[in-house]
Image (cartoon, rainbow, N blue to C red; front, side, top):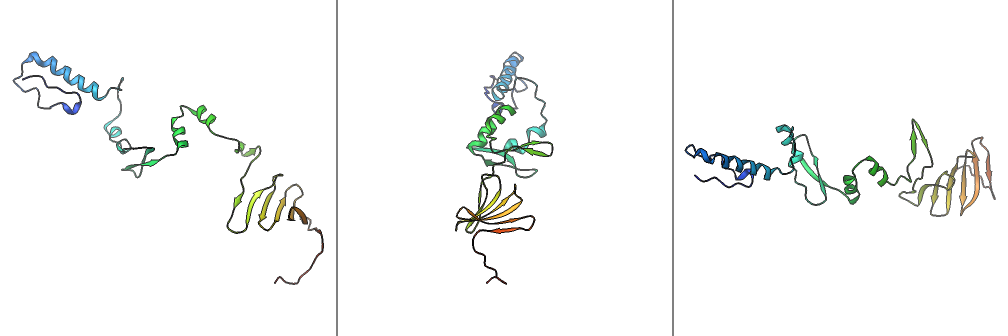
Length: 191
């Protein structure tokens, strides 16, 4: 029988060589097997220590297409999830130093032990309704209404201040003092 041709492991015929094949062709059969192994696993350049369980892992059998990465969907199944361009950047980073350099940390606060240090920049939060919660230029919490009214928790004065069109009209401090700019009307109940 002539020696079979096999480029890949799947091309090998397990019934070859037949029992009556000449011993002189044994070396050719061995070379065919070695060639199919090397063609099928070209990147393996050392000992493979993975077990059959490792190689049969479902995550290795997931078929990602496009911008996605395989993930476990249960203990026995895997699927794929899409990722963003930023996610691709993270996946392509070679080490922690590259990751650290790629992240914009300007809005982060440093932490040392149980203490946060540095300025914390918070974005404003637009909530349903006619107001938003934000931080003023001095770092004080503020509720701004679309009508031009604002309530500010003045942390340095330990007080709550009320503003109309940018002008402070009332100041209530922790000692219970109330200061008001302008006329005062008092009511026994609100209508």
